[in-house]
Amino acid sequence: GRYIRQVGSRRFSERVHGGLKDQDRIFTNLYKDEDPFMKGALKRGDWHQTKEILAMGQDWIIQEIKDSGLRGRGGAGFPSGLKYSFMPKKSDGRPSYIVINADESEPGTCKDKEIMRHDPHKLIEGILIAGFGMRARAGYIYIRGEYWHEAAKLEQAINEAYEKGYLGKNACGSGYEFDIYVHRGAGAYICGEESALIESLEGKQGKPRLKPPFPANAGVYGCPTTVTNVETVAVIPTIMRRGASWFSSFGRKNNAGTKLYCVSGNVNNPSTFEEEMSIPLKELIEKHCGGVRGGWDNLQAIIPGGSSVPCLPKDVCEEVLMDFDSLRDAGSGLGTAAVIVIDKSIDIIDAILRLSKFYKHESCGQCTPCREGTGWLVDMLARMKYGQADYAEIDMLWEITKQIEGHTICALGDAAAWPVQGLIRHFRHVIEERIDDYWSSNAGARSSPVESVRNPELLEAYQRVLAQKH
Figure 1 (cartoon, rainbow, N blue to C red):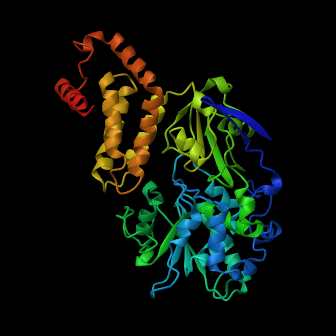
Figure 2 (cartoon, rainbow, N blue to C red):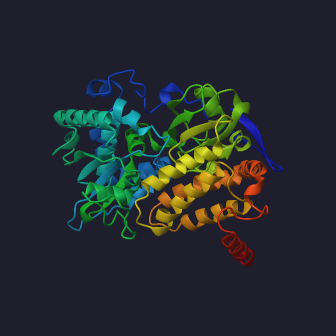
Figure 3 (spheres, helix red, strand yellow):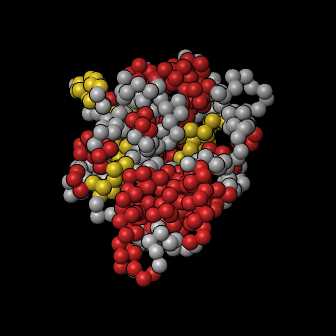
């Protein structure tokens, strides 16, 4: 169907996205309705004509991924076909590798575990096809240590693939040699960053590397490597069979395909499900999750893409679409599409404080802005939770996030800064009300309403700096 949207003074017609039909679902065993292993996988169409797909050639596979419009499902949303094409076409003597990021440590995210538990052969076949397209010698699945059950399922499925001849010296009878290994991590969030993951895979501390060199030039053991997400690779076999045009027919332009969404928080039916890209966020909540607990009017905010993206208030959530571009324009991001719903019973400052504590704990400590700044965010939010602060400190908190954001080796600094920025951008009035409430009941605690809780001289100096800058 189509509908008319009005943006400012412009009115334009566009297709309504959503309502994915069962025949278009890629992950048909998401809820373990059938056997997750080889017998059930063959029944669902996995490993069908894989030899013929490989026979189409490496360049054809990469071009088909490009044409499909597939973008990375791990958070960044970089075009997958373009990323895969960075791998060298001619070897200089070093082998190439494909590494699957199955660390999935982003709070709120629980999509990859469902693939590995209930549809592992889609991932394994996808690794073979994508690895072949990149001329990779082997694939490594880096899985978080807590996913013990998922790792066991993966290893069982990989053994089945070897027994069937789908992996090994003559993978699927194609004459191509390809092996897959499962490597367990130890639970560090930072190892979800690709270069920290590579460091951990090599047996070192999981600390991000400076770039360049990029992994496509020097990754695992100094060899060309592509690190990619579980869901991104698991959809590739279906794209090869049904065609790039089929996949790109879903979602808006530059936001193609279907997507696994995982919704948690204050909804009546928290769940993980597959839906079309660009579905309206409100429809996603109402249709698949039974609505917000207490009704839509009880909604306070939604974090639309995992804990590292800024939250959005109710009025924005009513209009925004669940895709990369719409959420970016709204001042947030799709991330991993882990939707966290926050109703009015939740203290929004305390909720963001909890996330800040997580990022403080998970910072590897390599970069000063992140190592020191995450602690400052926690300290200031811990006081603001009770209102023990000044209005000027809200701007100081914003300035701290800006000094962290973009000043670190990896994106953990950005991930720590963005939730706090979302809080200040949309819920500054809540912080100010909390401050007013605190000082109205503690009137004798300071001599004037502008005096800083900690250091009046520091506040005056900071205000002078701000005045000079602006």
